[in-house]
Length: 466
Image (cartoon, rainbow, N blue to C red; front, side):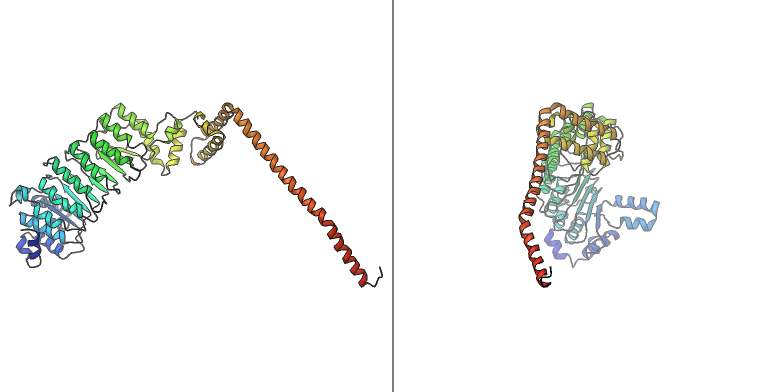
């Protein structure tokens, strides 16, 4: 059968003719009716469904177990797989699709090379699914090729997970997966998980470059693969993009050079908050020095200001801890980054913490403008930070002293110019006052004449008696 054949029979065939399994029949009925409550569908092996049911029943009872497994479709042959693909393709409600622990040998009737073809031909018409997961099963060439049209044509695919899905495809297969991601009509991926798939550096780099074209990407999880220099370069390029919104990144074990490449992409990055390194415990001194310098380059005040103030969490694999195995200096800098959302304040605290002597020499090229800027900075630091009061006071006086000491001519000239401007302002005030007096003197004859006329009028009214 092909898609046209499924389409022709879709509303005439009885669900009982497709499958004998009770839960399978219920799922097909709900898919065909566009049941608004069916937003998640899983496709798995019958043994997996039964095991999940048994575990749930043991802890939560039969009713809960049924509810938890009633969306697990378990195909027993390729034709069934084609029908579930068709009904998913025609459905406009399902949002999440998960393929997990499927043993293809149990359902293949046409041969391993064709098992997913009919499923993919139907599924590619779906436009409602936004989360696709493949868990604990082989990534075969026919599976990848069947999903490619769906990924390309999806309207809102935001999350893709391929976890513990050990690979049995060649470089060409991964290139096609990468091509699907880069060819998406709507590039709206936000999360991609590729953990524990044993994908090598050559294949991984193409996938990372492809998902990097999705500008809404917030999370990349790719631990448990053989990431190398090429993959780290691709990740670095994503991190360096001014438009990136990537918040969380997970990678596998990296060598010193690969880690330094990755870290270099975070120097100007203001988005990434969490970095998970599977090889956290094996990072060498060189690696920790690179991470420490990333978070606070203490070689100068300016370099400290330009350091990364966003990355606040390092973790190992699935560990939730932020501190285990991390040197104290790096731990402190991570803590500073996570302390405030205002990254200007974080930079201010780092400068105050790591610099006791504020060398003003590099800023003298700004000439007299630097002093009021420096004083304003210290005033703001005193208002927004705590625990640095004495250091701020000493540093402020030191900055003024350095300016007067190293730029006396400029200071004196600036002071004289200010005095000159003050004198000119006072002269201007005197000139205005003098002009007002002149106007008043010129107006005296007119005012005298008015008084004379008023006096004359009154005398005349009194009949000359005065």
